[in-house]
Length: 113
Length: 111
Image (cartoon, each protein chain N blue to C red):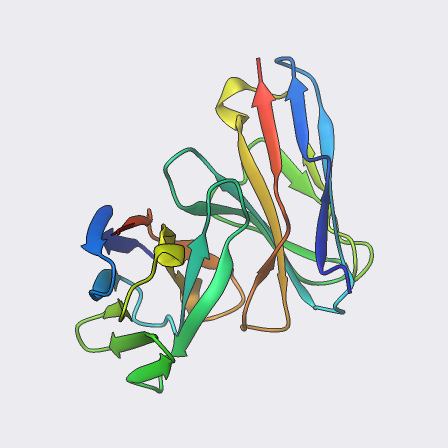
């Protein structure tokens, strides 16, 4: 099955700086890569996703890049704000189909004022 | 739209007891999923369904059962609860392989 590795486990950045979170996956058949934000005690919420036929996608301060050859994808957050503090999870769909998502272990992003 | 709803929000079980976690979605999504999230970890897939009458095992199905008799409902059954099943359980739904919408979660403790 799919295996998703996520780094770092904790990331502390100054407000206004950029944050980058990296993930690798193992199943070359995976074709959907979402990123979720989870605040303490809340449900995960999608912030951006990318499909395997696209190399980069951007939505305001958030961007995701995908390198299919190397099987890694990254989340970039620019001009970080206090409300960006949360745990971020990358994920990949399993076996390239409707098998549900395999999640990374999460990155705790801390925005220092 | 209420989205994905789950009941109960919290539950404490004794070892060996059984219970059903309820999940309902009103978005007419065909795909539904059950995940569990242990402290400080990512979510792990327990079971999923691509439509009414169709269910399949995920990564960690042991100790659980599901059914999907309608498009809207996807209950998760725990038989003979064990301390290892202490976790937060999230139900999710999607229309095909697209954004999965999560319910608010059920926090289960087995003592």
